[in-house]
Amino acid sequence: MIPYDCYEVVPSRVVLFVFLLVVVPAGCATSRPLYPLPGRRNDKSKHPLQTFRPFNIAHRGSNGEFPEESAPAYMRAIEEGADFIESDIQTSKDGVLICIHDVTLDATTDIADHKELANRKRTYVVQGTNTTGYFAVDFTLEELKSLRLKQRYPFRDQQHNGKYQIITFEELLSIALDAPRVVGIYPEIKNPVFMNQHVKWSDGKKFEDTFVEILKKFGYKGSYMSKQWLKQPAFIQSFAPTYLTYISNLTDLPKVFLIDDVNIITEDTNQTFYEITSDKYLEYIKDFCVGIGPWKDTVVTVLDNYLHQPGDMVARAHALSLQVHPYTYRNENQFLHFNFSQDPYDEFDYWINKIGVDGLFTDFTATLHQFQEWTKPSSSSQGKNAAKLIEKIELMISKFRNS
Ligand SMILES: *[C@@H]1O[C@H](CO)[C@@H](O)[C@H](O)[C@H]1NC(C)=O
Ligand SMILES: *[C@@H]1O[C@H](CO)[C@@H](O)[C@H](O)[C@H]1NC(C)=O
Ligand SMILES: *[C@@H]1O[C@H](CO)[C@@H](O)[C@H](O)[C@H]1NC(C)=O
Ligand SMILES: *[C@@H]1O[C@H](CO)[C@@H](O)[C@H](O)[C@H]1NC(C)=O
Image 1 (cartoon, rainbow, N blue to C red):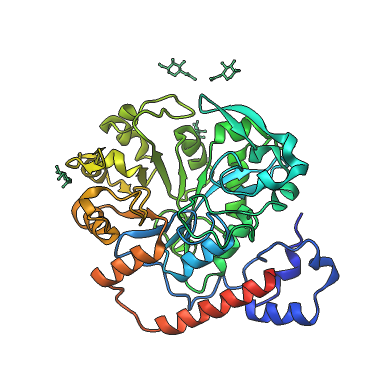
Image 2: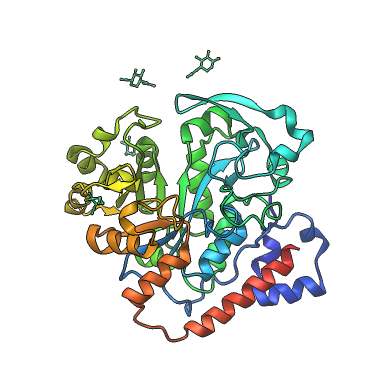
């Protein structure tokens, strides 16, 4: 266990910083988590979550700039105005929940450079497909921490490669709770069928039980827009409907059902896209979900990089009071459909003002934030500069501490 007790009495990160410089208690120094339990979670002066315009969901952090799901990617997203920081949760071999998107480590870490781990390549069936690589579930947390993250796309900034470790789910929660304003979390229970096949918890618990336990431990609870929720906002997301129904018995935190490409079936119920987007099915999920998170090309289909006219998925979801949070908005030409004149603002304008979505998963938090500030500004911009300064100081401190 991580000795969180060492930090429970420390009132703020600034004090903690000084504290570490002066004392560094031996018992805490070796095993302390990257981000100690936050000291500011009950800070009533925190600027609240905005709820008057669509949510800016920082997809894997500000991964347009930093390696995805790294601490700096999340901290940059917070600095840039994210309402929620989004993350994919998997498990290490020894049952520690971690933040990483792919089931394999190949595309976003330097595992290929680790000769000592070279014999750990495997082939497993993942969602019906043989997949080969280095699987996160085959490595202990200690081994995973020996790796360094890298940028997935070659056309993005490579200068941060090799610097940052994979973070745990708990470290992610600490980053969110340590933010100088209220920033929500948006964790996905990633490939739960696969996780439970490969990792067993000694107490008979399942991946999803552990996931909810950690949320509870960090004080996440309450239904959508409840007082508790607004203090520590969270959406739980999954592509696997039976896991969402199971989790809805464990926590009343709002859940979002993710919808993949038309030709991909659900991993747990083997249902087709057409079935899970039918009126009947949306009617069923509305009892335990507050919204859907569809791939955006399923909402407005695309041919030869041109958008068709939009379908009625958003209207049908809204008619059942389900929110719609499509993914993923990316600035680069490679991802922009021709209709948007290679202009990401044009794309945000279309989805927010024409399609009327309720939240957007973006790799570029700052671009969406600036678009929204220009077109639908925050009512109170007072104190924004002060908040910005505090965020900068916090970031400097955290950099120092991790070095
Ligand atoms: C995966 O590969 C093995 C060995 O080649 C093969 O027997 C099996 O049918 C494959 N499974 C799938 C789902 O493709
Ligand atoms: C949730 O709890 C209810 C009542 O205890 C039970 O009937 C139902 O089967 C549970 N659902 C899941 C998915 O576990
Ligand atoms: C899923 O459905 C397809 C088509 O109906 C079927 O061939 C396949 O065996 C099913 N898979 C599972 C895991 O139930
Ligand atoms: C996108 O552009 C194509 C080609 O000009 C056009 O046919 C299509 O209607 C446009 N889509 C939308 C949603 O405006």
